[in-house]
Amino acid sequence: MNQPNKFIISGGGTGGHIFPAIAIANALKAKVENAQILFIGAEGRMEMEKVPAAGYPIIGLPIRGFDRKNMLRNVKTLYLLAKSMYRARKIVKDFAPNAVIGVGGYASGPTLKVASQLNIPVIVQEQNSFAGVTNKLLSDKAACFCVAYEGMERFFPKEKIILTGNPIRQDLQLDPNKKEDAYRFFNLDPAKKTLLVIGGSLGARTLNQSLLKHLDLLVQSDIQVIWQAGKIYIESLRALATPHLNKNIILTDFVARMDYAYAIANLVISRAGASSISELCLLGKPSILVPSPNVAEDHQTHNALALVNKDAAIMIKDVEAKEALIPEALKLIKNHLRLEQLATNSMNLAQKDSAARIADEILKRAK
Image (tube, rainbow, N blue to C red; front, top):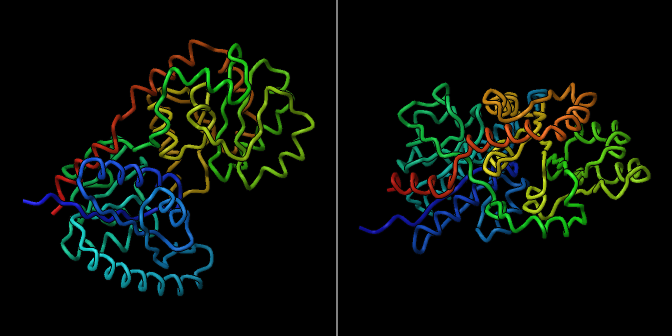
């Protein structure tokens, strides 16, 4: 019998959906000779740039999310949904995949629905501890759900759930030999503690405001800071912060070598996106999580609490961060015992080899 070798991976919208999708594609290619992988994304979204950069073809659907504030805009949204369903059906029929994998995001809805109607096995990868609307709607159609958190029986049939964890970017695996190179790369001092602040590629307004408010405390402290501000905020922050910075604080829009940044970070401040949390656990990094309030169904708070409840991270609410975040970080980074405790507990929650395990589940169910 021929091995299944044609797969469609659908979804995107954010790095949290796209990086796991690419990792799954790479794992399938490693396991299947002559694997053909096609991505389906949403026109104008991040996947249309990131996926081709990773070496995979992608087709875009003209889909967008529903506007809960302006209901009149949803007339066009419904039209685009119908158009996307029609286009997805044609793509799936023409490509004739052995299995279709959904990673969340606008495009995965039409693609996975069409695939299930055509009796093609559907595998869903749910990154968050609180399932997205699209994935919940597929609960009776999917062959299985590869999840990153326990307790997902609230959303999916128990017998279809497989705990695999979230795939992370392959270049982030920790190598003890990287530390020396990392200190040299950032021109930082190995004798000092390092705080890493990451708000995603676009940045996070609250994290930036929190650092800006307590910049004097950071400058006076004996720690080093790698501050990824994001491309949206970098110009205004440079104007406001640069006159007050010293050589211990690196302000940048984007950290090109996240593997180096993680290698030397004694403490990480981050939003609570699924991919970020998976990275922190796999790398065993103590963290303070500030969930974004601007996400569907407040899923970042649920993600953060999954760690907080296991004493694997500290959480500070977005509304409290401006006042409390930096004082808490400065207190925590000096507490060696507490850092070790958080690091150990977070590493205990890590799911290893997630991409390969998800690929195995796909191959078990592929036609």
